Image (cartoon, rainbow, N blue to C red; front, side):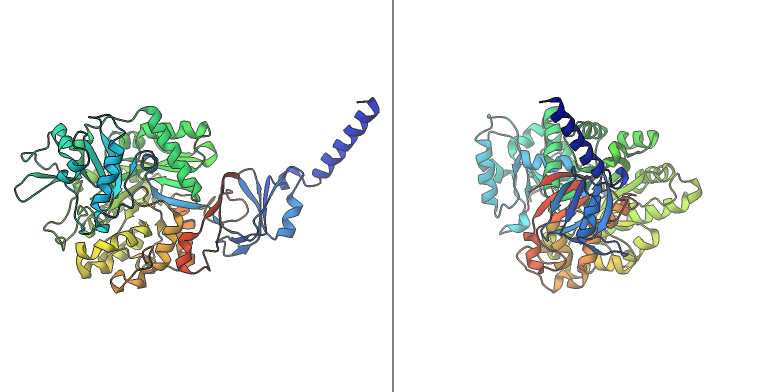
Length: 562
């Protein structure tokens, strides 16, 4: 190249740079999205067609023609071609490693019969050395005919030479074969642990089904996964959820070991989704968090740890949810996993230290007990003695609530964290479990809103599939995925589409103390966006589950593109 040509090239580059800098750096966009159908949830500007993003923040929301003034030669322009954009979807209750392990191990979701489950197990066991454990998760007996729990004898047919341990979809019940029970030393003389049950036949022999804390009798004998496998499960789980459009997930119960893995994987760029983490309690991990305090908005807001997750009772499907009266289809009122005296000190200390409490409560007895304990703590620890005046404590699931207790959520400023898909799964067996009268307070989303509460929505994956479109559909249709419903499903409890969208965006942001930076699409907030293939606010309800996630944007970066 001659000296003259080099000089001309330098001049040209300088002119281009000068033109680009006509927009000052504070006004130039890294990404622009144009020609979109954008629902902002900002009441001052509910709809838009374009967004400009600078760094991890939203720079502009408005018209496609206007967004061009924020573009430079280095701006990535994305033509949405009419696709729908909503604030980044948030799953307020998920088990991240559980989602990963579901994808990496034997997945029993969708097994339509006991025989189908047995065949899946037999196929899996054929590739595993004899004597090694075969584990899986996801079966739901309510979808079978007859709808009865599997037994150890059923599993013995599948793989008698392997110890088998298959967890129900809800995670609160599991079935073992005879070999696994033998290894665990579970026999007719085994006593039920506190907060658990070894189910037995008419002769008093274990059937193989173990509920809640009784599961530990077998769990403790299963080899722990390697560190590499734990890492893989977290990465796979995060990728699964991100691909479905979730931009942030609230983990419902971690250990400090898992917390450190997540922080390391985020630091290395292997996990790109936002994490709002919560430690299991009571116990050593919860005590450590109370001692050292919360971790807030680490990695530019990608990681927060400021909550403790407590499990108060079992699940309705496995008949462990704690009810005020006996189950309609079985003698017994379910299981409480902690006493009030065991929880009271934790709640009071957490309130003083500014740590959020999230308590799993499914049955009406468990929900009332937790509301009572929350109210007692709020009265005993006034705002002046708290590090955080507004604690925003939550009850996870709040599935079966006595009608008298529904107004207490709003009165106490307790957030019901509810998963709409539970209703369309559970109602196939909820009537037989609860009877008609108790269904009036079951999955009562609209009643919660009418009483003044807000709902933090989510999926509870891997208990449910983890698809936000199923959650949205369940909330606005209250029908199963085949379109079935009846009067016992209380159709008056459906949400409007705007309410359902808020339950997956704005209200979860509030529940995680992030409404200042997330939950709506407006200038200055984090650039977390979900791009969908259909307009879920107008398309017919039956078409909602067919909606695909086209793009996930977290912190201004396209982390998934279909």
